[in-house]
Length: 221
Image (cartoon, rainbow, N blue to C red; front, side):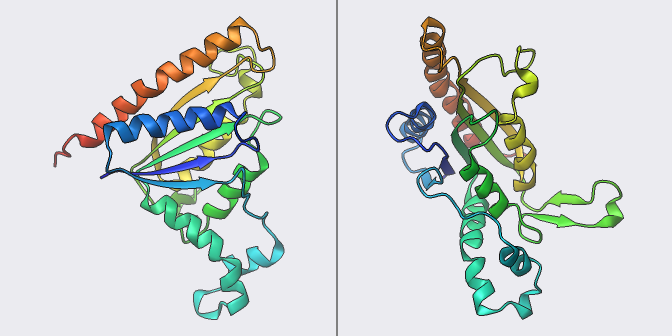
């Protein structure tokens, strides 16, 4: 049985294209694997609180010295990390806000990328002291953009701080394979946008079948 962590980051509800796109992916997957476990986390509707001095202090306090107040401060982080740990596949539905992540999604990453929990830090490794603890996870990013040309070679490639930031952070959650499907031209609302919507929704079940099939393949020693 595959476990999927489904994250929605849009502040919109029914009008959100990224929500609809990620929902379509989950629907396609469950048709292929009805017994799959789906962990739903809606950070768009319920954003994790931003990092504070007290939270950072709790993170770096030795376990044996953590106070009840610090333990409570870390409770949500522990819960979110447990969801990531259980997941084989993380599915993120997110819009691009000001060329980057919604603040709610950034706050989620800030809560789950945590020393001693999802990564280790060792200066003996030289200039790259951070290493993820979790391994072998997959990621699907289902995004929506107001403009266009954010992909490789596109006219706004260097302005894409959404998918690029997500992929950078996801490394420290054990992501070793990633896939992206996006909708563009949303602010133009023209034929190009309609074509982009159609292409994205057509690509979703194809990707779901590809990944679900790979999950069923036996692992050879």
